[in-house]
Image 1: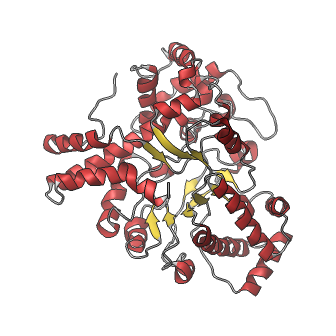
Image 2: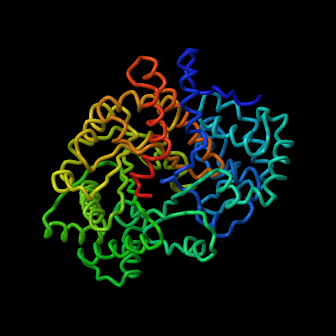
Image 3: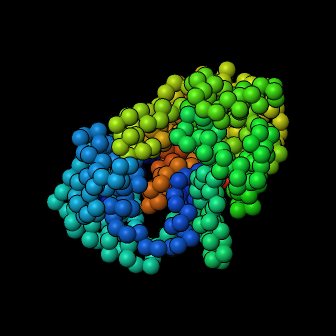
Length: 466
């Protein structure tokens, strides 16, 4: 069945008409994708995507975590094991498993993210099932073999204006360099992600710090360590970066005297630190990174509140980021205070806050962003970048933080073909929310049109300095 053009719009006919009119003004706007996890190699090499399963199933933890929850082994989906044990290599077999379990995605945003590119890109308007799995696989595979479905061509077709990747602080950014050298006119920029060099509880932390220092020629001292981060950030800026990203367990910050910071750095490098010491080091590094952002102008993103790798069997078998990360309650008011006391009134800092704890929107995040000039609210993230999650965000945050203290939408995805669908979903939900305000005579329609444009385009471009 073809997608309904009124999907995600209000059921009330009068309000739905307003939402349609608002959506028509933003539907075709270029996409600003300031935070995501697509592979820069896709753009530098511009090779054809190999097959439907590799494109849709293997990289998308929204898909394989749902299948795993219903007893589908990750091995059967071709997810590599750490021990090198055999896994399914037949992409058609993987696709058949996905198709046979597609009913699991009823009512989820994943279904919309999947079905919209199926229709828009491949002309497929029938629902995926075990009965049509092979036929749809063949149809998609035939399209993927065409030049029009290579990454750069899709970038243009998606109407992407800029897309940011997320890159380790230790990355040489070779693919970004190759992309620049190619002369292609698409804009793909890196984002500085230092987590593996600032979190003592991450695997290989000491080795990662040693590599960071070796890359920059800095000494193994607290000041040398900070200088190494400054050098790497400067390199990322030369490659087009406008932002950093920090995926800490909490939003805790600290402002230690220099001598205490030096002693703590020495302890974490030796290893064997307590959980409290690891948390204090991460907290200090958030404040240090905020100071660096004031100096170099990189926008700072904080993504806290995920208990990562909650399932030890999956972590030991398959590694991190395998769909076993779970949201946790997160404090912001007290946790951010050391950073905000020191830097929160500095006009040179932009700190974009995300949450996996929706209860914090009205109680903490909206009031904070509605006061501190440096703070902005990121869009609903991960488990909540969904129609209902977006509605709750707008309802809870707008009355306190307004619209201008938010940053529009970012897709935060590894699933390349879902990017237009994700942005379209956000535009539809925002237009529906604005239509409700117009219908209740809380906004005039001309104001709502301007706001729809802001939420779809301008706020992200401005906040991320793109």
